[in-house]
Length: 419
Image (tube, rainbow, N blue to C red; front, side):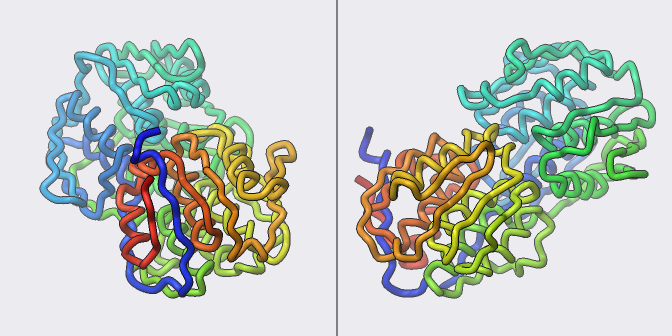
């Protein structure tokens, strides 16, 4: 470990009050960047997130001949011919799932060879259902391990105008195909294989962004989408704050009995994780069973809060958390049990948090392994607001989506110590 690999949170003796502005939505920023890259002309994206994940997407677009300028800390200006040219070397996308899945589908309508790759963590994240779908469309796509890297030899077209996709592991597979389909030569239909789908609300984010860039999408049933071959039109697009990032601030507020203004009312968000606000607001009387299927990225926040709830909480519908940036179910149970053995139990793909309001005010030294996962780092920081001795390992992994997180906590008066 180096001097910057550990950060200890010091409990706050008073309610946290003040104003914090969460960064722009990662989910919307990466959708808008890709759509702007597929549109002919210049698009200005404001309110955007500048983080590891979005920089990987921007760098990939640049490598394929798209101009991406950054005039300030929250703006991208994207100028494109509407085509993504085959790059000279593999596209490296770190552990950015959105960038990896979205580009894999979009590049299938390009011309030439594209290799989509990532870091050691991304190389463990499944992409086979999307590759299988592309192969069924006549695309020469190959991912030997079922995870990145993916090699695509694109000819600019699909051989069919209909695909069936298994989205049980991730809604990103559907979003990827939706965004690509509008660039095809004929009307296109996407159908779900079965009813299971990762957080469906993210499909709505995709559709809203597509329509903003001129796409025409109909949904005749919950499992079928029909996309017209409109292509995309360059546009100016504003990105709302990140609801997943907001959950940490909402959590800090209820844990300390404070009042923190994030500048956006909870009901103004369009992202699925904003549903977490109602659950967080019910603390310390959160429900005995919480279904996380439609607010997956908020579950780490709520699980840490659950440690201080009045009654135990079982989290269900969270199997997909095992294939995120890390196995988040295992990371949460590991971290909670590092605080106190028996605080969390894995029962299949459910997570049961024992809950004990008496944890607050105790000295329980614990080194929290973040598994290089930004959401594990940010959520366990909340435990440090009430328990003395919580140390976050690899704290800078928050740069993936919220580079200013530790500064935001410090601005509210939270004591942080790097050692």
